[in-house]
Image 1: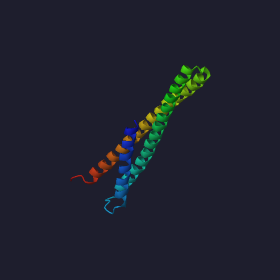
Image 2 (image 1 turned 30 degrees about the vertical axis):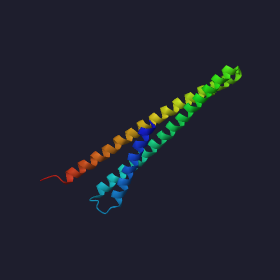
Image 3 (image 1 turned 90 degrees about the vertical axis):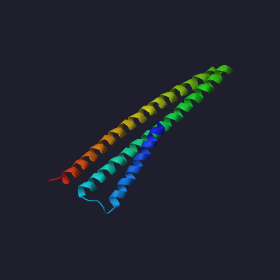
Image 4 (image 1 turned 45 degrees about the vertical axis):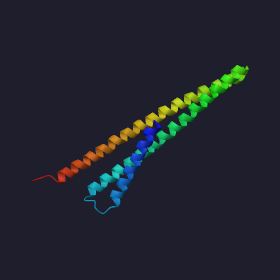
Length: 140
């Protein structure tokens, strides 16, 4: 999930750079095209924030899962040594950490879903821009 989100974030940042470059160039043919680029760039920036939140949640979840595994191993060793009170504590920490890891991955998935919805918005802006271009270039 982290690899997917980081690849999509990289593509999104490339797209933002492309739109910035187009907006700075003098070759824009119309104000409508400029508005389309601005809207797509703003949506791409919003999408990049979604991907970044997804990455943060994914890595935080991985950390919680590592903590849960460590506590489970430590609790197993404590059980072997007969320290039953320590087993209770590590079991509680392990369970809490695992639950936080699951919640974090759920949050990361939600962020990716929201970023996908922004992709659809960007496509709609693209389609409107293409339709507008076709209407201005229509043959007599």
